[in-house]
Amino acid sequence: MKGYIHSFETFGTKDGPGIRFIVFLQGCPLRCLYCHNPDTWIKSNARYQMTAQEVFREYEKVKGFVKGGITLSGGEPLMQPTFVLELLKLCKSKGVHTAIDTSGYLFNEQVKDVLNWTDLVLLDIKQFDEVKYRELTSRELKPTLDFLAYLEKKEIDTWIRYVLVPGYTNQKDDVEALANYLSTKQNIKQVDVLPFHQLGALKWEELGLEYKLKEVIPPLDVEQREIEGIFKKRGLKVKERE
Image 1 (cartoon, rainbow, N blue to C red):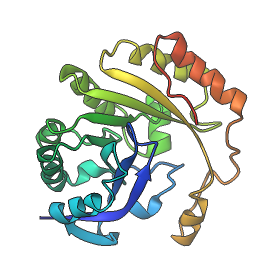
Image 2 (image 1 turned 180 degrees about the vertical axis):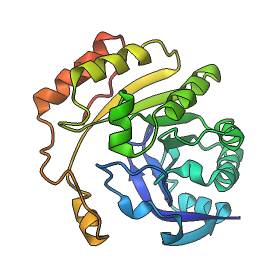
Image 3 (image 1 turned 90 degrees about the vertical axis):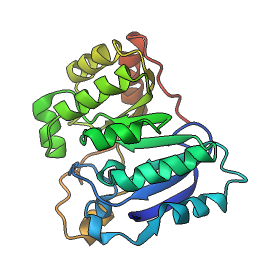
Image 4 (image 1 turned 135 degrees about the horizontal axis):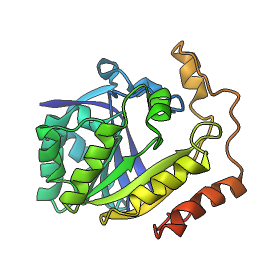
């Protein structure tokens, strides 16, 4: 069994606790307007095809300073549940902390098996308004909310990630509704508000894709603090910015 791999990061500090080894898997069902890795969308465009053992050996090369564990990101790692399950089982057999960065859009029995071997989920909620979510991602919001409900049921530690995009995700009513919803979940350990940036724009151009956010300016620090404050007022822990 081989996984389709986009790339690795050997000193990740933003994708889970501690310093982590990040595996970016190929393939994604969403088409987010602000995606900074559109080159991960198509599974067949993978740079590497590797077994779980081969991926784990890459981790072992740097485990001397990667103390946090392994995070599977993408793309959408749950597009490859069989491979991910094999890799996670290998990690757990070696005592390595595991995390998955996901949109929560894919939710089935295979995914439930994967979650049995996952210590932490980094759940990306792109918007809380259903119409705006579809406009932003081209997909529905409900599967992600069902996914989160299951994480709570199974008491799986979860970090929420929310990308702050001026004009798209900075509407206070939407953020307040999301904060109210998240405040009812007992398994959420923190919320990470990530500022939109333009670092992925060149990739869209290189791929011949229309990038609709080229005129969007990243949020000001004062605006980000205001949005973070909405989550804090609901009793949610907000990840401190570096």
